[in-house]
Length: 122
Image (tube, rainbow, N blue to C red):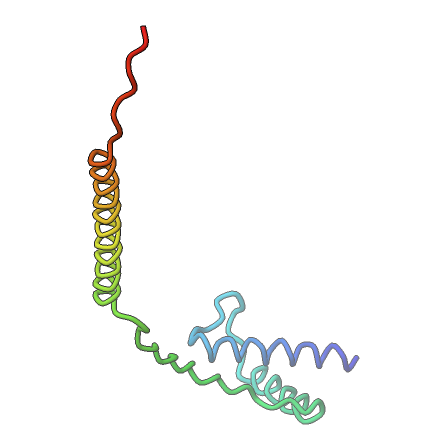
């Protein structure tokens, strides 16, 4: 049964790859005799050539992406917000002063141009 040998060869190849990546030996299976290891490696080579599988190369470690510089400085943002707040406060104060001056002007004009009181009718 050819498929059983191919399956066993694939399992052996996978175990060899896992051991090469982790750097550990397989603790679950007892060590094999040198003859069995040689036979497994011959079958793995034959499976590679039949199927066309290339040996797996470890992927290079990913390069860290460069961190972009911050688009704004927290200090300057706070300073801008404070300046904007002060402008609003100055505008509100100016509007209050203008309203107060306009109201006082109306009241003074009304006092100067006061018409005599109508007679009290009792």
